[in-house]
Length: 487
Image (cartoon, rainbow, N blue to C red; front, side, top):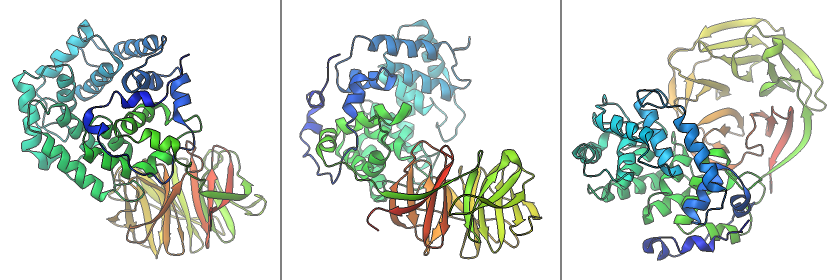
């Protein structure tokens, strides 16, 4: 197999990007991604070789064609794929990226559906062609269609619908930015794209995070928008990118192609390959074995606590050798997290959303009551006498009075998708879903520090023993005392 170096990429870039000065990076990849790109027989690697390196391997056409057939095999007689026009537009964009023949009958049926659709107005469209559909039709060259032109202009004229840090879903701005960029030849969209990229960059933290927004959505947008403002945003996202890399050099099944494409487009790929590798950030010690089926982690009364929903119990473990020192009955199997405070275990339950309180000594169920105002209930933590509960849908923290939970007050942490939490010396640490970081926030939600997740693709827990953090991998069935390297 021909080995490809990233120098080939630079010759393929537009003059604007070539003329940009190479930014200085403080650290680089732990694993060179190009061996993965050169050798992997995955769709992501084949896309990189075709679109970024512009040097496809002989087997790449078969890899991409197989994926095309897989997508089209899901098409319904109506032409829809996935059951909705939104899903169908998503699949059409995938097919275009994979290199589908646009004249195929299946593709033409999708195109006619998209052009004829009169969408009800919601966040993903403005009563015209669905935003993903506008992008797909522009990529197919159907820009003479007055409906496509009108839909693109609507995105500019009604910018207030989608533009803002709390507007739409965690990927909302990405969708509109990409669509407006692809429509730049039919509407004057570039000034809007530049302005939106600028405020996103300004609000993105040193951890590469913007509350509620998936940073990899912005990586995706940066990989198709050839503007200096996109390059500036991408540099702000490097903390997430570097810490999200797998040992094989990839970013998994969904993010590898967007990451490599963005880094290549904005002249960062070689800089990161040549820089000193990002150092390890955690020192793990004193492992404790967890019982089979353990989920969630807390510390209290000198014990590590974990739930065993399948066995109907919560157990307290010795932090020295993992022996079970206490067993409490648990009559619920849909747990979402647990915390210890004031001699009690506070356990969140889903379907419906409830708070269960157990006596950590006697094991009795003190109360179990519904929680109002939450969507996708997550893990709890006791912070300053308040019960904090993560909401995975809201990307925020609900604050309850533990004695009488009513409607919650809401706040943010310094990551976009807070999960399991622990408090140490006035800080709130949490394991973040979107950024895949462990983030330290102050009580007001400001960023104090951040570090990698040492078990990137594993179900993790976090707890605090006074000033000591514990990290758990439930996939490995172990918990460790954790300290930052250098502390």
